[in-house]
Image (spheres, rainbow, N blue to C red):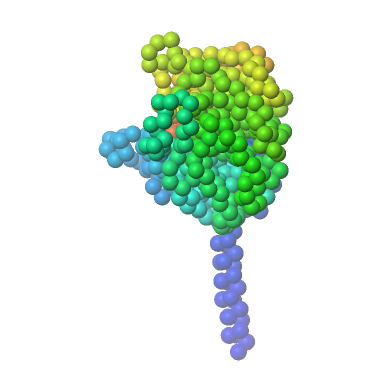
Length: 453
């Protein structure tokens, strides 16, 4: 009898041991407990767009995660073109279009296949996924154990598309299900959803239990973060396509298209503080751009303006006073062939210098924040994402999948790296400890040790 009891106890103990091992395999390791940010309140983690978290320098991992329909790195160019026709098609179907967020040991990766993926930051293994019923083009915001993500697409219904002939017409962008969702950060369980008429592609900003965002129906919203209840909504006429919100104290900044305007609103009241119309803005570059704002209150945007020759455009950097919208300076970065879609690059601010690229000139730049003077430029490859800085190195993800590592002081190329599983559009890279985490247009998330870059 004693032998049977011991055998039974052994079997029960074995079952529990295996169960705890499985849970430990899925959830973040305790050894990395102090390694990660506890919250992620906006696009690129902060308003300067430099998502670097240096705490816990022991975090040094190497893994790759692919969504179910991710493009195989072994697929030949011939087979790729035969099946998908062009890279833009792939990006619009299953790519990971915007940067991930990393909170408390979990990587939250949005995907154009309609799913939000939660991955173990240490191993890259899937913890849960959530189907939002439309494309996900925002960085997930994570606050107090809740993940917020917006869903929508860049399509115009015919009834809306034909309005573009009239500059003063009210145009709504987005079809199918457009909504913001609040999910349990550990389980992915839906807490609430808030539906809108227009697409909800941009990343919101979190401020004092409130989500603030512009979207495709010509409004800027303030929503209660705990309940999803509408707090305020203001009509601005412009639709906001990919302009993720940045925050300076209680001021939230977004950009709109048709008409092209930069907007600043009071996050608490929803009152419009100022709006500025950039001169000669080309196509949708205003509403596609995400503003950066420095700690001393300088807002930076990049737009495209018409070129001096047919078929060309010019990249222009603009700095404004965050409190009143006064333009402080404008700088032409250069000219080149008009790029397809998303006709600008996201700026990043670091210690009084703007670091950015241009899909028009295919160059990387360092620009003085106060004066707009170009400090250096370096020809690399077309890019749209903001770079990221750690130490003396600035990392530029580019359109063909190459990550260029430049000396931040002079722009000299230090090294190059390519994972050969897709390129980078507006995706920004995140650095946690000694690891870069970034998604690709082919549906992959890469955790890359900085020692490999």
